[in-house]
Every structure is written in structure tokens, then in C-alpha cells.
Image 1 (cartoon, helix red, strand yellow):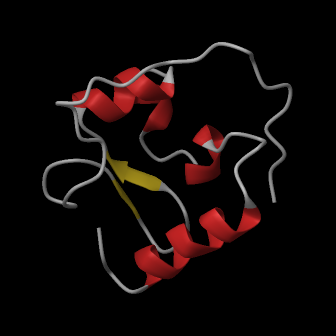
Image 2 (cartoon, helix red, strand yellow):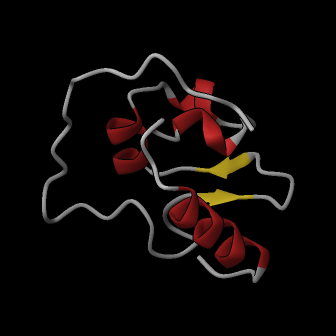
Length: 84
């Protein structure tokens, strides 16, 4: 597993009216090999990367080093089930 260090102390607040994950048709999606295959503007903005840097990159590129392992496991369970 990638260790995304060093982290930063920069907090990015997301506007309440923005959705970064809703449906794979509109927002962001990841294939079963963990590569980002689709993004929306909100996903790009909150990630801190350019769209070109995200597309085809491993999803854990955007994983914060303090993200609990259980939350990451739940993310992959959802992806593997074909759910957004």
C-alpha cells in the first residue's frame, strides 16, 4: 500500500453544495485495479491535483495518510460491489 507522506496541515473546506461522489456517471469512479477512470470538477478541486494527473492514476494517490484503514477498506468493498 502506498504511504502518502508527508501530509500537509492545509485544510481544504468543501462547499456544502458540492458532491464529489454520487454516481459513477457524473462524479468520480475507479476501476477494479484501483485506477481513477472518471472525475468531476469538484473531485479535481478538492484533490489538489490536475485532472490530467488524476486520470489513470492509482486512487490511493489522494488518500490522506491519516485515513483510517477501516474507511479505506469500506471504500474498496463499495467499489468492488460496483457501487458509486
